[in-house]
Image 1 (spheres, one colour):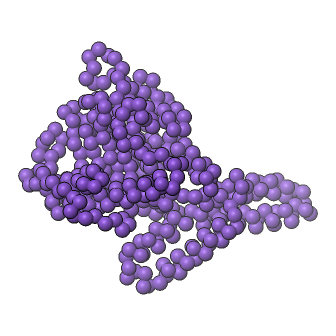
Image 2 (tube, rainbow, N blue to C red):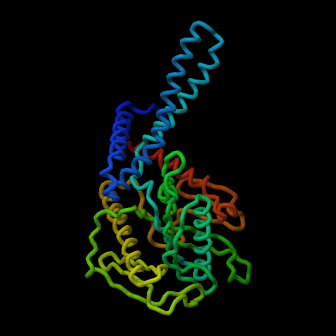
Length: 362
């Protein structure tokens, strides 16, 4: 991999210095929205700055070691070690400067829906939801259930979750949820003996996953109230058990697009409507960006909207304890661990493939 271009590094250094200056300006604290934007971008640049500083320090050490080695051959090993270190840091910096998804540091809204397969599909949707919740727990993310409709056997007909990161880490890096979860959108296929199968036959069914960014501030998305149908109903829990006695749950239907958002997690109808409006705005923004990108290029496939067994991004094979991601040819025989939330090896492979594609398209 070639080393990072000087112009790209100079641009980052200049931007970082400008952000530092803005953060030291007391006037910034009078504008919370601007302060969040500046702080978020400053945190995004922190890993790049850390690598750059380590690289320049290693380059200085290498230059000094080469001078010493010219007079004393015993420094040759140190020169070789530093050359390897510099090469590795140059490659790391080049990777960090590769084109990035502008939403990588955003939080997400994740929806899981049952599809073909009836009750078995709903049970599988429940398995997927628990897999993501366990992964979120491992990452230290905060999960909020916005809405859930259960099947008779305790699976999910559909469920919607808000997943938020823990914020900047110790090194200043943003632990973005979208950067990890953006690859999960699509149709997930399961092959196993359903709980409802009395003959022991393996069935194939599917569930759909939709993931979209939920930025701190949704861009200028105009929602005309006349384009909305608002339904209110009584919130309910698993198995239809009532969780309150008022019509506090809210369902918003955006008539021009057909997007439906429901929220029943908040205590009041007003709170549920406000939360549902925020999610709807995020979905509309994601839809607008996807349509704009599709108009400009066909290089990135849209998330699958139909939950059909034949259109799938991943297959979960219970009898063979195997998981297969069809987009990158990833296979592993640790399905039980993946369902327990150990998604990092798979997501690392998907991230690496995404970075390669972005570098090739540059």
